[in-house]
Length: 164
Image 1: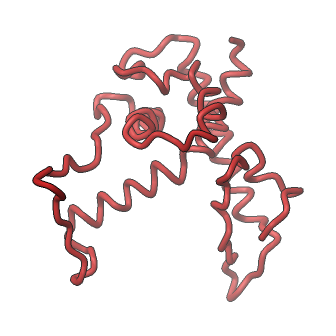
Image 2 (image 1 turned 90 degrees about the vertical axis):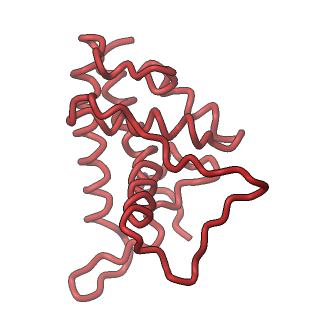
Image 3 (image 1 turned 90 degrees about the horizontal axis):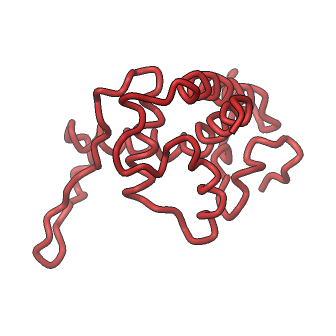
């Protein structure tokens, strides 16, 4: 696969995985710091104990650790059947490997991951800054920014996509 194709896939993987990776980090942060609402209790069912959030390998270089977190959490939380074909597009990035390919990445993959991460972040930040939605006190009201479900992943940040 050509480097340009991998860069594009890495950018799309960032956009696709952003809600999963960062939502799970938020959940983990609340669980670790005890900031869950006092009325909420977590009780194991039928004698099973929870394992917590799966842990990515922290030896992965920080600049590509997003892909390590995405790899681990995609395995722990597989997509709905209708989303599998879309997710399988990212196989060449190493996201389906059981062991982390990011500890000693293929020399051709590393620059593609870095560039794709940069491009994906720029696309997402641009979409968030230039929303067609309302503004209030200088804040963009992005209520539907992650409405990218039900087979709309490929067009999530397409300005031509109909909004709810």
